[in-house]
Image 1: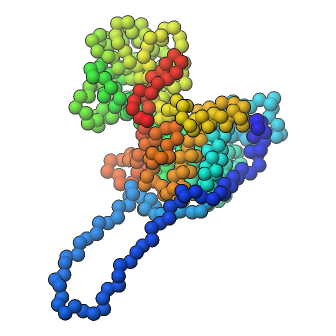
Image 2 (image 1 turned 135 degrees about the vertical axis):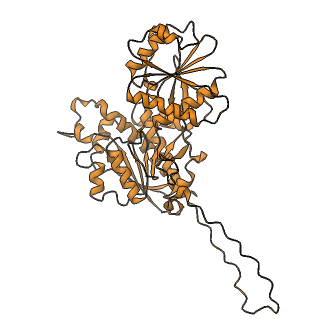
Image 3 (image 1 turned 120 degrees about the horizontal axis):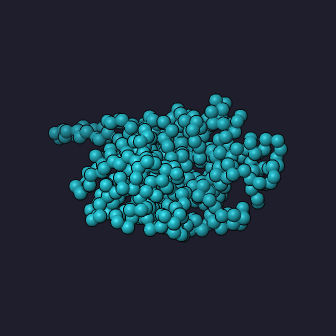
Length: 441
């Protein structure tokens, strides 16, 4: 089936019923066995009463009462959101203008295609779901409208590739209804707090720079650590996160971090004043944009023969190409919450399925759609609506090792503001392929 036909079919209501027999993945609650009834006759001689031991009070997971509830169903209702832009693509007819797919449609479409393949596979394994697919960019059917009209009231789990403002609307709804909402691709908390039912898979920038700080402290025995940032509030905030992570780090061999503020007017000789010849210079560059990243790299490139350098960039460096001759020989790293060398059985299955069904290769968004649905559909099937007590089951791993941890934005808070994937991969850029550096599986 080509994608033109697929998009046309998506114009009809997208409800998928996966109703096959379960294959032992539903757990049966153990039956309670009462002890023998108390004797009605009084003993001739009363034994001295033993002091009654206080039974420990059952802990409410993460201080969220709903998480202690065991709620399982025969069929789970899942709402899947993706930015398909169907209103724009089919504004005048059911035919795509020029028979060419608009580029802005592809990420959401590929996320949906990967999710669909995961659902098909789970159905064959006996899982039971009623899945409703929604276009998060629909003008008359966006999340806020769906919520207002009660269309999501029976939902048990929300999985979405969404951004602002949809993420806030869905988070508020999930909190009100006490159901889990998985943000699968947005690397930001969207200003959300006080919602333990909100799960972030694509880790926030703060988690990225905390992981870099931890890695450079432990990965280099003797080092000169510099944070190179521009004089903007945003990049100052990134430095603040790095400094905070340094101060909280309990590690007796950690080295101090120095801040270097640069601009287009900064010269190579000015930068060289901060560099050392007798040890690795570990440089953390806070520029997220390609122009800024390449601007500072050009200034550093002239120093590489004199000063040993390891340069750590931001997660956005993942898609940047540093093929210019002046960057040759520079050791570059970036961070990512995802890593997939595509050698596992899931990747091979997804690649083969895309080739046969869509005559194309799966993109990163397709892999993310497959992984998010497979991971959390399994979680809800195994443990019910409130699978939050055990979010990181190794058996549910697909491509990536997730480590969802509670995030408390205020000191001494008792309830998490949300849960976030804290596993960050440190990846070195290579000429033909990138390589994972840290020991996360």
